[in-house]
Image 1 (cartoon, rainbow, N blue to C red):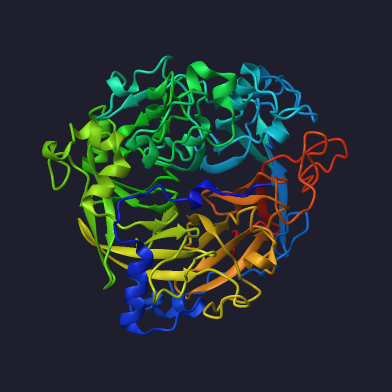
Image 2 (image 1 turned 90 degrees about the vertical axis):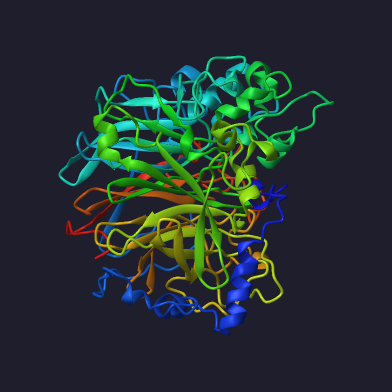
Length: 619
């Protein structure tokens, strides 16, 4: 068995100074003890204490008893809470739709009418009580009865149907949520017609592939826009492409995006070479790596890829606004890549009134972190700085198609896998998870950085900010600089979300190559989990522990804060801690959650979490 997470392998050849070195230099200059909870409460790098943040509320926010870390094949929530399963993979969108078959034998046509595979980012739209959720990727062991030893066009079509987005109406009846039939229920898959908007329009020659523009793939984090649409983001899209052409070699642009001859193991280029073989259809690659806007209120509308936000491995997009302008933050989830910010050109309400998208008009920036705790947003604008015709850049569309290379050219700071970003609704501080990385710098206390950390910053001007470390994750048994304890040790932070009361919810995605393994420092941390943090005090408590092999992701709240939706992704996936790997003959080797059917298989699913007394989640 091979366990290599492609996100941990950098494709950045720029030589730009990495964040690890910036952090190490600042630690060295300040001569500060690195700590976990102390770091959060007192301002690890000399910044003002968290409780002094503008608009912060110093009242305690966490009222539940922390649950212990665990490795059982179950979901655990605090005393006084109940977690129930909603819309697992294969649930028909409508009551008359094709039923899920526990042997994995549903067809591609069936899957296109069912909830997709590997639930990830999610948002709740209260107007029609719609839940929109991403489906990041598929696992051949789970979705096919016989695996993918032999790949076919039918198998590619089924996998495409398992990708994308599900939008469903849900109803709360006497405290029990369920899916209901609705004209809004629909699937967006890897085969759904799409269009492009912004500087890279639908007729751009670099989008002129062999087939019509269709599909969205590897959809990770997501968020609702202020105007009520859904943004889903394409992350590891490069993994779906490959070639049988022995003479093929990647261009510099393709290499920068991690494109390789063998792809990520999906073998789609063998089953559908017209679309996924890079040698015969290279421009299909350029149709992915974008932020995609979907209108849940218009079930007949097509997704729109908003190219002004750049092309990279978008983990997600997070929105706020400043003086009426939309601000959208996004992390590029690969070791050694960057954090971006898009700022609208004018009031988003004015643009909407004119019938224009606020995401088509504005400027994309990339972050540069300085040793002294300051930072700058560097514009990625054709004709400015290094992005000139003399340096080989054609126009703004070229800058956006090659966003990673543009960020390299202007001197952005490489980061340890920047993932989800969340904005505190009260203080407006911005938080980003850095899942893990390779470390660097002789004075860096986290070399390497297997546990990850969370960085926060405050905007101090249109293109300037001040940054700090909110928390270093990890287990003090293996890293004595960590000051977390058994109630809150965690590693590999990923998902982030603020609730209406200002609690910060932290999801983890410990790699299946590390989960539960003492030689990786993850035995006491257990299965992946969901934690709640109080940014005002630095307190963190573990709220939920998931089943074996799973990632916890996609937290979304109802407006009253009394229901939490959260996703359990890839339960039962190949995990190096367990000696027997899952196979088509025995997909239950690691997990059999949530059905526990002796003839079934594990299923990604959405959880509905409620407080038994009907109160606000987290209190």
